[in-house]
Every structure is written in C-alpha cells, then in structure tokens.
Amino acid sequence: MRIAITGTGGRVGMALARRLSAKHEVIPLPRGVMDLADSASISSALAGLECDAFLHPAALTSLEACEDDPRLAMRVNSAAPGKIALWAAERGVRMIHFSTDYVFDGSTSSLLDESMPARPLSAYGRSKLAGERTVLAHPGHLVLRVSWVFGIERPAFVDRIFDDALAGKPLSAIADKLSLPTSTVDIADWVEALLDADAEGILHACNPGPPVTWHGMATFVVNEMRRRGILSSTPEIAATRLEAAAEFRAPRPRFTAMDTSRLSAAIDRPLRSWQESLAEHVALRCAAR
Ligand SMILES: NC(=O)c1ccc[n+]([C@@H]2O[C@H](COP(=O)([O-])OP(=O)(O)OC[C@H]3O[C@@H](n4cnc5c(N)ncnc54)[C@H](OP(=O)(O)O)[C@@H]3O)[C@@H](O)[C@H]2O)c1
Image (cartoon, rainbow, N blue to C red; front, top):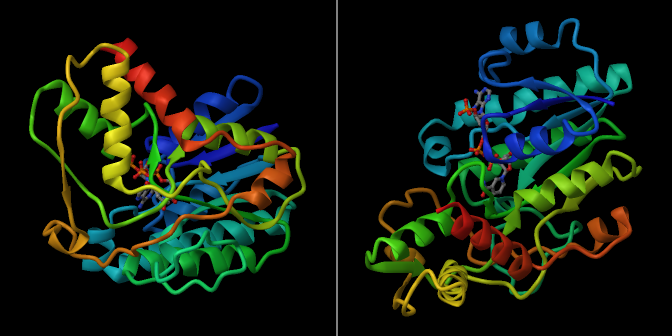
C-alpha cells in the first residue's frame, strides 16, 4: 500500500511512519511539504499525490496555543483536515484522522463510548471536534480519538517524571483528573490492523484499564524504575490539584477515560492495558540510559 502520513515530525506521525514503512510505501508529509495553516500549501502537496490511504495525525496540539489563537486552531485542526478529507473522498482514498478525548467536557465518571455527546471546554477541543465533523462528512473515513499519548518519539509527561526521578528532583503530579493513556507502539499496531478492516466513523483508541490520574501514572513509572533497580528507593510524589496548575490557561476536562470496545471489535483482538504498555516504555527508557 502507498500510505501518506502528515505530522511525521510528531509523536504519532513518527511512530506510524516507522512502523508502516516495514511493509508499505510511506509518503511523509511534514510541515515543510504541507503547511496545514496554508491552504495553498495543502493544495500543492495534494496535487499529483497518489496513495491508497491518508493518515492525518498532524495538528496544532498545544491547548494554550489554540486558546491564544482560536482562528489558527480552526484553520489547522478543522479546515485543513476538511480539505484533505474531500480530496481523499473524491479519489476513493481512505482517510484516518486523529482526534482527542478533549472533545468531552469531563463531567461524567463512567467510561465514555463513541455515542456520548461531545461538549469541548477549550478552543483546542472545539477545533478538534469541528475537524472530526468535517472529516466524517465523507463516508468511509475514520477518526481515532486518542488520549495522553506517550512513546519514544517525543518526550511526554511520563518521560519528565522518569528524568526528574533519575536526577533526584522533587516530583509532583495532578491527582484529580482522570483519563487513559495511549502508547504510540499500540497506536501504530492498531492503525496497521485497521488498514485491512472496514471500520468507519469514530473509534476510541487508548489503552484500556482502570482510569488513572497523572499522579497515578507517575507512581507507576517510579515503581517500575525501582523494580528494575535504577532507583534505590521509591521517591515521594506530591499530589497537586488541577485548579492549582498555573501553566494551564485553557480549561481541561476532569474525566475523559474512553471505552475501547468498538476498536477492539474492529481489529478483532483485545487491546493491551495501559499498565503493560507503560511498563514496556519504562523498560525501553531504562535500557537506553
Ligand atoms: N499527544 C497527546 O497526548 C494527544 C492527546 C489527544 C489527542 N492527540 C491527537 O493526536 C494527534 C497526534 O498528536 P501528537 O502527539 O503526534 O502531537 P505532536 O507530537 O505535537 O505532533 C504534532 C505534529 O503536527 C505537526 N503540525 C503542527 N502544526 C502544523 C502545521 N501548521 N502544518 C503541518 N504540520 C503541523 C507538527 O509539526 P512539527 O513537527 O513541524 O512541529 C507535528 O509533527 C493530534 O491530532 C492530536 O490532536 C494527542
């Protein structure tokens, strides 16, 4: 298969390109080739492009940047995927677009399935929800909602905890906001399986398990580090509150753990738990030091 992939400098795009290039011809479309903020750049990158599938993880992912410039957020996260989705639909090319658990307002306390109403709290969430809708206006396309992505491609929250614990720095993490994390290894695995499945619409795509806070993930990381012998004792992690996070100017939802049954049925196998995937990530970080 010829597979076009945007955002190949980002966490998910890089993981997809690496994984899929083993069996497929990957056409990377980084920002230098297709600038999503610039309609002319999108048109010129699409002109003459030939592919069987179009994977679109690229996005303006900073909540604060979206809050500061909601028009740019809409251009990159909604108008751009809409233009690509139309181009793909006209050519019979399937598009797999990436979205977020931040389309939800976080007011529930049970797992969110794909039928639950989306009510984003932030400019980022609103732009991503608009992006989903413009992509799904074309039958056949697929939207994968991921959450709290981690992987070796680009450091995430769990890597900051790993590095700070190793350096003996004081640790703290928010303990009153719950979701489910998503490993880039698993995202690439699911997408590879979905290329051969006929799923369309929205799929929730995170690692299942008990909903967890950032504090819970941080605790899991240091316990794994201790178990692997790279920490001689288990450090304390101060539990902080979402309201106290001064660096967060955009509102964040409190509970966005998603139900993944539909994805599991689409690829006809169970998904790895977040504990299994995060333990693997910590093992890789330990081996690489
Ligand atoms: N990371 C998470 O925790 C998380 C959570 C929920 C949902 N998601 C969704 O998952 C998808 C993948 O996220 P990620 O973790 O891979 O994000 P990421 O690491 O921030 O990567 C985003 C990618 O988008 C590219 N990009 C941004 N603006 C662009 C523009 N104007 N033109 C072209 N490319 C542009 C970036 O290019 P440069 O490399 O040039 O900067 C980067 O490669 C996104 O749709 C995101 O909304 C992510």
